[in-house]
Picture 1 (cartoon, one colour):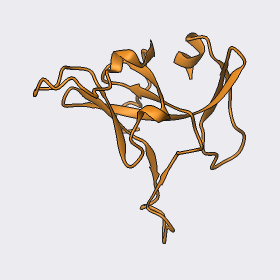
Picture 2: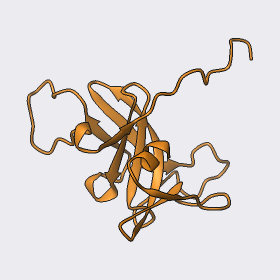
Picture 3: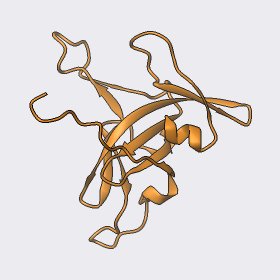
Length: 135
């Protein structure tokens, strides 16, 4: 949320539990819903979930639920890169995970690559938040 604010967005936080978006952003009279996700750097790309998983619930009706029609963007923080990315949902596959390429692919394929740099909105330095050992 700090990176969104620093990028010039007005922020509104939904009230209550089980809302389908984490924050609502506003800029230039446009209001949009955002789901915040954590990304992990794997094989030169930031990988993040684009759906909710309910397998840990007893007797779930569905195992995975997409955000299609419920958010306009994913905001992804990747601790490994220290960067925050804002990705329109229309730019992503909606079945399992999204990827943003940080390093060039090993097979040199450049078509249909989502480059992380194209979606970067800010950096976040998070330090000193871990509890001491044994806590």
